[in-house]
Amino acid sequence: MKASWEKIEKNQGVLTVEVEADRVAVALDKAFKKVAPKVSIPGFRKGKVPRAMFESRYGVESLYQDALDILLPEVYVEAIEETKIDPVDRPEIDVQEMAKGQALKFTAKVTVKPEVELGEYKGIEVEERAADVTAEEVEAELKRLQERHAELVVAEEGEEAKNGDIAILDFEGFVDGVAFEGGKAEKHSLELGSGSFIPGFEEQVVGMKKNEEKDVNVTFPEEYHSEDLKGKAAIFKVLLHDLKRKNLPELDDEFAKDVSEFDTLDEYKADIEKNLKEQKEQNNKSDKENAVVAKVAENAQVEIPEIMVENEVDNMFKEFANRLQSQGMNMELYTQFTGQTEEVLKGQMREEAERRVRSNLVLEAVAKVEAIEASDEDLEAELSRMADMYQRSIEEIRSIFTANGMLDSIKTDLAIRKTVDFLVENSKSVVA
Image 1 (spheres, rainbow, N blue to C red):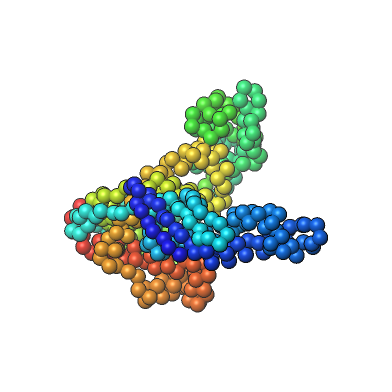
Image 2 (image 1 turned 60 degrees about the horizontal axis):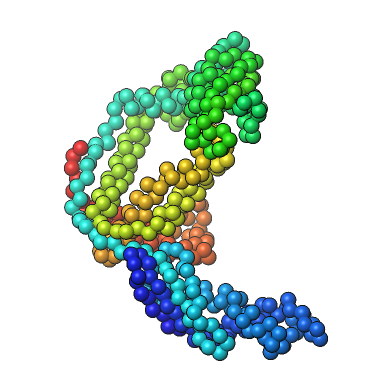
């Protein structure tokens, strides 16, 4: 096989490939074996038609597409390796010559990973923040923990709903007197003041009492996902079944004993302070890393292919959907509650996606210039860490990643982490 690469503009070029006739013949043989069992010719049983008879009736050209499906994936990978290019999108294949007994010639228009022109990346100045914890921060965290351990109690008869309460509702929505799809629910739990429902809805439930019915008037947002509802005025007929509110525990030694390993509230507060300090230190470390990488990326010159940004947006959207699912919600419910479409959500992710792609490209460039790589020892340490996390043996973890062809990806990620460490070590701290 012969392959050559010619850059035509920016991050695109043409890969020209010639595959020897012998390999084409093998692919045609495989293609015939694939279709032969389905061919029926009078005088022959299915699967027993001679090759010459098949080609005489249907023409060898009828095998070309199946032969290409067999041959192209493997020779394309070989051509990439031979020309040392790094594609970021599917190629546009154009078969130029294909015939029995002859070489296959094709071109592939390919978008490749862009070249990065690095600017200053050593001696970057970043702020160094203190990790001190104030008494107010400790009290705020204690209050949050108090809320988390609150007991939900049923509100007394006659009590009015207020923000923070959990309202158990039946509701049905109408636009111009007609019920609309997705606007009805029974025994739905809604935390008032959470802002999780259509704007204006929760505010009108505040003040209702158990077993009270009410018409709630709202207007759907202009950017709502449903074309039939966006910007429309609606009436929700609401029945408040039940009302639950938080009964906060006393902040005393008994509370400390119930929710922690400590015997006194003072000991518990000291532990909270220690944890907050550790969290601040970790956040400061992450912020410093992000600031250094952002400045190094800003100093670099790179033209990012659109497809790389689109692919990153898709990855971010999938991550978001998975997080919703882990929280007991799916994307359909989320879009109904927020009025945001998939397109709107992806549009909001685009800027972050472009930043991620740019940062990764620049980090890869720094790693290349500084010859930063992940060693076999680094890989073993990472597999050991994963084994501890998932409580499995290193051999099992290695087997899983090997089977999925992901060991090289792990080493790449480790090299990027080492590159970030390198940039931070070579930065200059400025006291905030």
